[in-house]
Length: 629
Image (cartoon, rainbow, N blue to C red; front, side, top):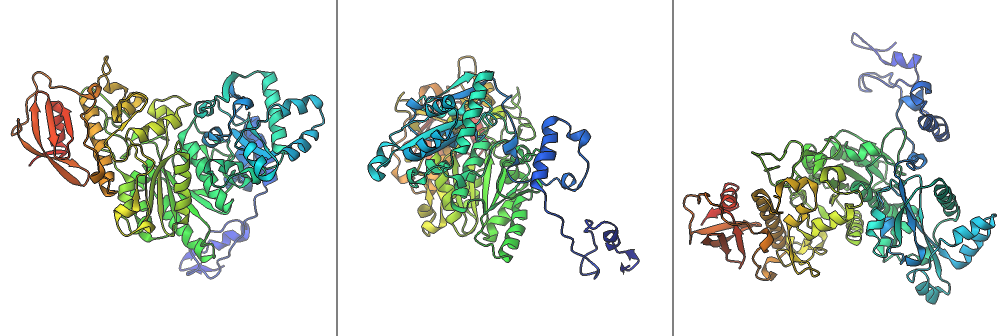
């Protein structure tokens, strides 16, 4: 028996147990032996282990053998998970109204809606293969002929395409997101019945047996059609996320975009958080690519080690994505993320930004908005929610050497896909921060993930951007705000109402800000200050992108969001009518003057007028937003 000093070699254990691979290390113990563990038997896992969990007998009957004890989960096992008992309703497809926009397929967080397009010839052939005449007619009626797939291709290749949207009854959680995003009213929620569910299950089986989509009908220039291709189906559904989860949609779309280029030849390192909990509830795994979960704080560092190993093996072209929430990337793993970006290594980072620690109950993070009512920053008599301003991870990432950076949302499908595709093309580190609605912590309905993400962009709560170092030598050349409404103005004006839309409008739509409005709907002073914070962040981006010079003279704040001086407020010492000030807008303060004290109006040299209360002026001075000039 080999030994190191007075310590016995742990290789003695190997002679008793061939699967014990412990040792003091090869530099000290020449008897170290490499042990190869047997490959997991996937069929056994599916038939024995998953069946035991489905039957509720796993805890009692499964032995602690090698397949179970290692906690390894094969790829795609979540496809066997059944959520059909969750919701009382399920979407119904109305083919005659469908235009084939693919919004429902793209934004479903659970892979519960799939699309397929096939030629008329193949369609007829496959239908004739269904033995039962009644089943054949039932399935035939479900197909549509949208102009997008039928008339155009018929002129081009001589044969139109038949299109179908199919509901997977085992994956649908009834969130109704698909119904909300369908502008053509081609989907509606209907009550479940035993007869209906039997019919849907039968149709879904026919759908799977029909074969893949005919790619002659898939336009590669239309990124939203991406999920018609089989290689994009990397996230199979069956994850334990909440109904309508914004993160689920983001992960599906990320997997689709990477899968479109690399199929399943890539990998994921996931930081502990919501995304790892609902995607690794043993024995269910929704991914068809290898992925691993390290600690909460070190996913970027773990990714660096894995990247080095892959490069050593000659896998330099194999993409590696590091995924985590705002808690993992903004907070506890922030230093690790910074080190990754400074390394120059070809690793892509995807941040699921819910503005809270979603997994542990909605505690505040540095991504949380000012004024937001969350755990650890609860709204009360003394404190009006979170008092700190939001950290902007994208601007920080931009200051790292040669790093691609983007902010996007799933509601802006083309922008999202383009960000992912460009990040993969970029030779070096990349960070994509994606706004992801968290229904229970944001206080919104299950079907509102996309709507709230779109509103976050419209109200400057979460501006979209891309920063690509390959576009030029200056920040102005590299930074694009394309995709945001009214990019040269402070706020966007809704053309339907003629009203200016700001951060306070966003706050009105979510429960996390509800305590900031009185019975008349007037916002608190804290929200007014938060509104200024979002405007300042937007102006900073405009300045960096070279858009401040193109701005039109700003209009005064709209009346409904304009507070007035309160009786009894004391004017801050040294401030009065005519006092010259500096207002911090972006990276360059803007000079101005106090032009009125009743109400307080700050007239700035960029033709902006800000009308605020004395109390809000006091807070702005304390925050350093306003200073005497």
